[in-house]
Length: 209
Image (cartoon, rainbow, N blue to C red; front, side, top):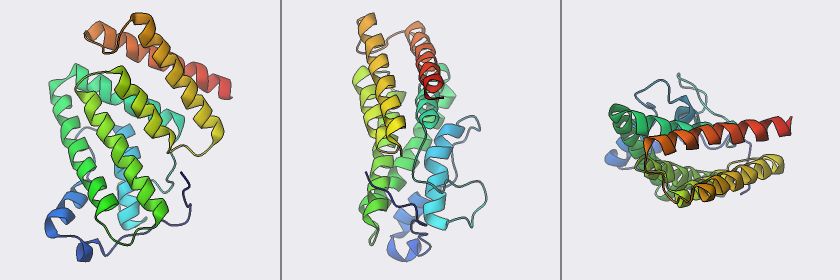
């Protein structure tokens, strides 16, 4: 996916082009998750939506670049699985946040007129990423994890990082196959998976240095 690094559409006339209902849904997404430790999701989604809507003229932090880094992708996957599996309250927080965010991204990507092709592609990819993370709240399925990596790959800038993510995906698939699993069904299995995710990421990150 080709992305443009120029200032990508500060959409300040959004109220004039969206219905009041859609406008509310989009604005709700700039608040961020109701839990401070979910900074990985706030960085990927909230900060980018803020920048696309308002540029730098908004408090709370923005993400100017359309690209993510390998640690962003690992951290978001880790956080969604860890917090959804360890706390009913945070399970609900994640459902609420990803629901609002996915709705906003869908509206902007598919119903907002006049977007550049680069920005439209980015919003569609972020929407797909948000949806797959929402699915992972309900269970750690191998096919969903693979799909997450495939979608996230589109948001990496360099071939080096894309190759590193491919290696991470292959090693995670190998781990699932070694367990003879396509879905993790116990807390212990989830804990082992999260440990493996950290080990694989650390190994690959060290190899990149």
